[in-house]
Image 1 (cartoon, one colour):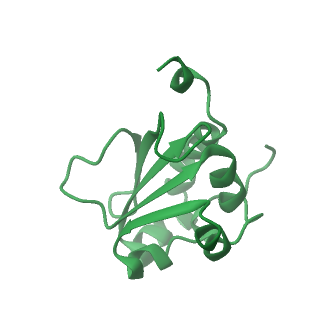
Image 2 (cartoon, helix red, strand yellow):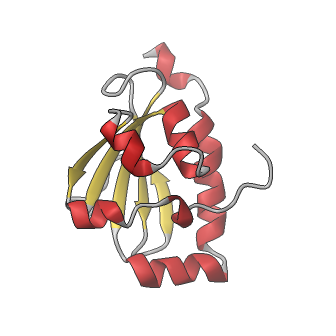
Image 3 (cartoon, helix red, strand yellow):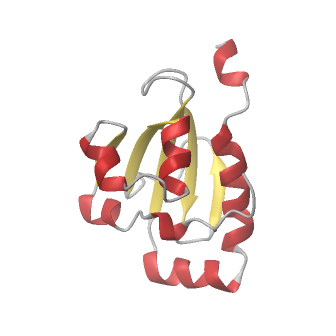
Length: 125
């Protein structure tokens, strides 16, 4: 349990995502995608000590914890470092899936809309 209290690199990305969704570009994303994603981030190994985030592209919110409003449209599981690579566009999501670096549950059509384009371009990380 002590493992999950460490700061994940993904935390900073999720904070940037919150700010991004408040911008005009973020509002366009919400209109275009209109889906809810749950993203489970594991510090070292998928399935262990995961921290859940909800990226709600219906309401334009990012929160920590499981989704309260039923089932998310798609759920992704990543190791922290792999999530950062996908979000920054350094790893293709399809390649991440094929390599087992990303696991998906839920709607595949919803999952296909989950691309690095939904994340803000980081100024510095």
